[in-house]
Length: 140
Image 1 (cartoon, rainbow, N blue to C red):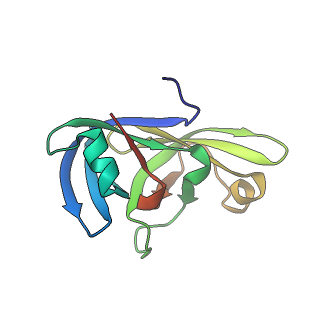
Image 2: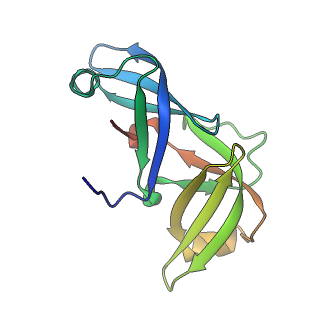
């Protein structure tokens, strides 16, 4: 299967915390970062997820928020991944921002061009890629 989501990050299940309907699934990427996804318990079962199993965190580029100066920020989003801008492609409406994570992986964000300009994004700027746990799809 091929999918259109730009961010397909390979990892290993580090833990699963079950709730009544949904579970938190924590993945550790090869680069060392952790990503938390919230998926239904039936999805955990259907995927056969268990500790130490390989899995992918799949994130649409449009679900990635870019933040600058996040060192002391407090957010409700579970996934705040530090990195630096390695590329920016500006379109008339949207900008595509490539972020190299601290551990070496890359995540792509699609944000409005206005937002990229308001953040004054430049290559090598330290930034954070921010993703709500409910916006992470888990694949095996």
